Image 1 (spheres, rainbow, N blue to C red):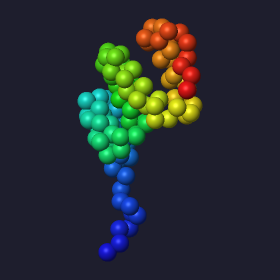
Image 2: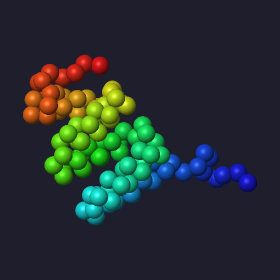
Image 3: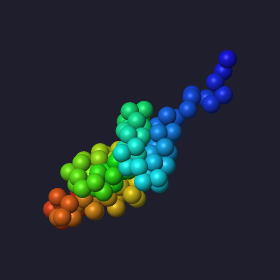
Length: 103
């Protein structure tokens, strides 16, 4: 019997959206679990990496936040959100040298 959804459901999108819902419900641990599950389903999930970076920053772990953001930048260097993030990471208070990295 053919699958009506084509190649099947995008589990990364399911988990990402459940993560957003958990964030809206002020459940950051559940949101992080969902974003991690999205990354397991799709290691190139830019939005889940960005969301994990945001959650890490909110919980006071700037090192983890920068790590997630840098991984996101590697996946989508030309996206406008990535360009804004690159400038933000270049700020000295975020561990940068004050100069935007060129790619």
